[in-house]
Image (cartoon, rainbow, N blue to C red; front, side, top):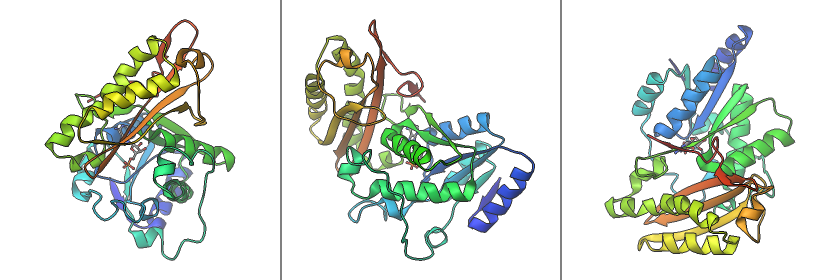
Length: 303
Ligand code: AMP
């Protein structure tokens, strides 16, 4: 496995692989790797000849009062995991390498970024789409692998790729969870024991949503049920509970089962426990006979 930290080194490596007609799979991450990241590497390995993993905590996507400085980092452990996953190249550039001077040009995807995490983290998605665009220009991947855990991010990146006619296929991969259902996240290490115990309420609420939908609820009623369940955790500070169409993220009204006849629906949650902000989601698709979970996207995978 090669570990490269400059753009030039990486471009040279890729130039040779492309000459040999090898396909490139790309997995962008901020490191502190867990089984969620591993699932993306695994999928990339299955679908592409060469797997490139980037590890870069991107300052551009953090707000001034967010956790950029304290974001968990452990490059030695990450390299060990990447090696075990048979990654071909780890690209781990410095901030100066990625942003040698002030950034004048940003990629900004409108509409899809005005709600959910876009509303609670102003500028976040401009930072994400800009760094992903830069990384795509450097790596020129055939396919790039993203987790459905960040469902809004997937929608935004797919929109950017389509709007700008970029030659990369975006592959969305299922959410990987702890045994009790908590979605894996690098930020889970911040949780103390009490917070960790109560964090399970997010998954429980998503699990119960299936039953509530079967009971023929409206969007408002479903939101209320989700709210009441999560708010029963004394440490939960709810940032948003939203039920929108997916991937276009539009507001919905009315009976959920009826809406599912011709729409995909996302239940998206952002809840703080202490200083730790957790997100989770489930995507439903349906038809007139029964409501079912989208197997590829919202499907549950436990580790
Ligand atoms: P991050 O390092 O948090 O920026 O995440 C890098 C990639 O891993 C993103 O595409 C995430 O959506 C994905 N990811 C993070 N957590 C999970 C998870 N629990 N299951 C699947 N993918 C994940």
